Image (cartoon, rainbow, N blue to C red):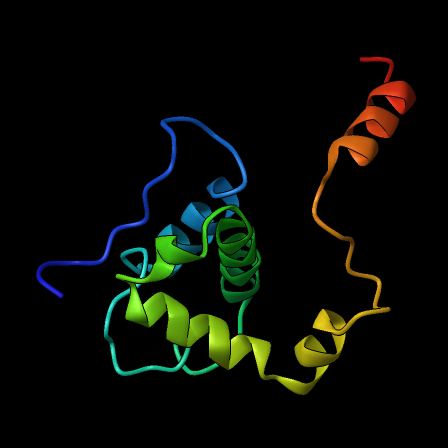
Length: 113
């Protein structure tokens, strides 16, 4: 891969903002080959969890979007294989399914949108 990997996001605050703050505070540029297993050193951090959650959302939209980002895919695999995370990703866990039309309509009724 030529150059630095770069996460693309709309020019505004959203789900990625917390990750930008965490990485900035740790002095990390988005994701780089710094020889560590996680974004901020050798320990799992909140930034890793937030980013992996975002990567799952991205893959739900289009699985091919991560094809050119092997470091992101490796991080996702590494975090997803942690026993507690692996359990959370199994069917029947507290993890909620992707939003569909039925759930969207229900949310609109609840929030009177």
